[in-house]
Image (cartoon, rainbow, N blue to C red; front, side, top):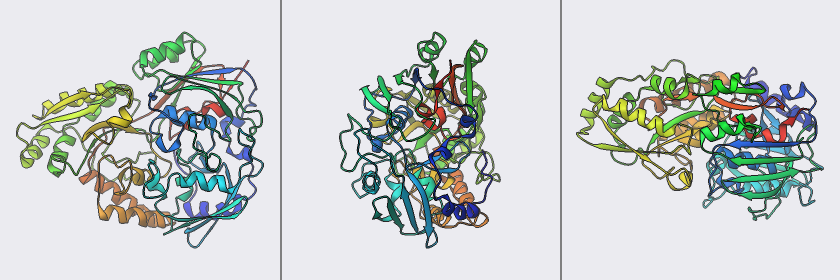
Length: 515
């Protein structure tokens, strides 16, 4: 996926977005056909747990994000061409070298309880993620925000401590969903989204009915959305094949041909920034030793993992989170390969001896996560390294294991902007910095890149950050995998998206049933 415009021209064009209507959000593919109203859509999804909530501060996997977008709206939408589009923030102006952003709040947008959206709702929803005690995965994304000021009933001004040319992409993060001012009853969420929650059992099922006063044209087309959490991959595939559900996420790469060859079924493949990661916490022994980290990196047979577990649907990773599809991908870095002799050499330098490593893994992270850990265990043996795979329970994995285990296998869905991906996962102050990576040079490069609007000048900053992580970081990123969704042919509106599956997890509002 490639951006076909310069950042400078994009910033200049941003001022001209005044007056853009809601219809501009819909992708070209969706506009190609007129959506039909009516019917029920049943989704089967992986990525849910009993600890899930509608509170957007807690979102860490696909099911809660999907549910959030079903009931609520975001501030900015990142479309299928990786462009920032207006959502509840209808238009904007940029001043003071991208330190000041003035946003116009969309008018005539009702919440499910009848209240009309205004500036105070936007400010309140953003402030949920701000402050020293904010318990949000997105709190670090708003570190540059020094003030959010109400200019009028439908206009706000956001002031940053330094220039940020990617701030629109920041506001497109899935955490920044909008609720009414002072709202806190997350068991009964109230949003401006296309559907009203009817029933909800975390990690099991959600049912929502169409909101008749939804503000987006040609969206929220079906009468009812019925989501069932099916974390077991064979069960999810079978549910689609037998007609129990109409669409599934995370189709099994090993048996996807069954779906491709089945009548009335269609598979949608979305390459992008999704990547598996084995995160070593770099401030904890033995992972605080660079030679230990390098030994483990060279012990990973990436090609085997891609071939055996992902059936070739993806590409080899190089231990930094920027995919080849990103315009800022560093193409000059040497590819880290499976090299048992080199792994042994680094292990000897680290004095590892008979050290046994414990790698926590759960299929709650992604299908075959545990199998990925086992493959790594087997390749590491050839380098004389002992890996003990700790199979973690899928339920509660994101709350109880992720960010806590010193060596843990998880995944990232990628982000629209390279700086956003680098910030949310590797900035020293990031809540979700799972490798505990803290590097002053890296942090400075990050904010220098965000402040620079000229693409030619900011490219060296982003390339250097990738090199630092490639050379020294705590992440083993063996593969970038394609998203694979599957649906009955009657389901329309499902199109590829480079960030996440199911139309960047917005499929509930975009899909319709034909016939």
